[in-house]
Length: 403
Image 1 (tube, rainbow, N blue to C red):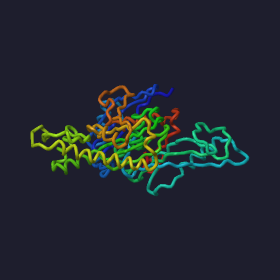
Image 2: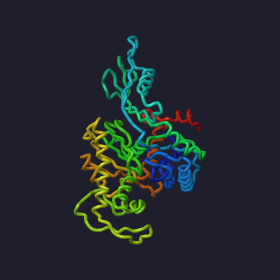
Image 3: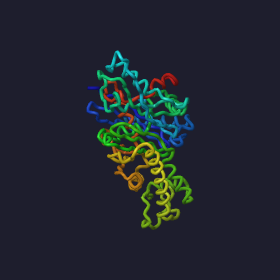
Image 4: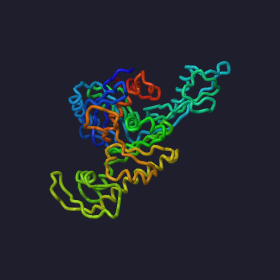
């Protein structure tokens, strides 16, 4: 049985920086030891524009997490997002020689190398090469190919890659604080580790993480990642739409969106909504119908863009477990109804409950990514049965950035 290990998950988001300190017990349960959060600056659409400013925010979040967990943070697992992140499927192939038709360990190594040998933009790096499964002489679903007789041996992968310089900027933001980065993980993939159960992945599930500046997605079918990527639009765009449409300041639009808004447009919902300043002082009124119409149109556009992108490769009807929404914007009233109308699937605003410890983030979708990073770290442990299914860029970090 593997021993528990303290791990820190760090997300540098558009609206906030979150750090979660936790450990995975032998029973697989995540125990949260401490949480830190700060307002994010220098980040737009999930990407760092000013790493030095963002670094100050990271320092504040880590300091709070350290104090609450009563541990010294020396390294983290770092989540990254942005429109530059893309995913695709690839197949590696090895033809066995005539004098040796039994698959051995070298053949397994060779087919993995072949599957990860992909053509991506020169400036990009591979974040993950996720093994989907093996094929022997055209037959899929092979779990353990060692010792199997074959002429043609193949392995299917889902590859997630990102712009190298943008990843390096995120790493630098942390490294300047004297904190080592253990691995860099795609935010959507991290969230799926804690939001989705193994059974849901097997049934087929679409995970949508709607943050402030970006919307990440990961589609699982038959337990494997089939599609992934990022739409560079999120909750901040809803706020901006409300600000422009109603001609009110951004901060006021944000409060209005959270406290009064609904994405489920219904013309029968009429009446006025009071506009207030930060102290609650009344500053006028706006039509509730106008507010909800603005929110509905943008939310529907996000889901329709995503559905269109996914349907190019896969019928979403195969996602038997449905759609799982997470991230801060998933808390918007009525968003579940809009998603269900667009995807024509059961939609869940996904909590995560397999944890103990701090109740301040109990199932909170705004913490799905940093908490999911801890689950990811556990899966990467050498004695974990899942370790071979994941690939990170830890070696790339050490080679190009240093510790």
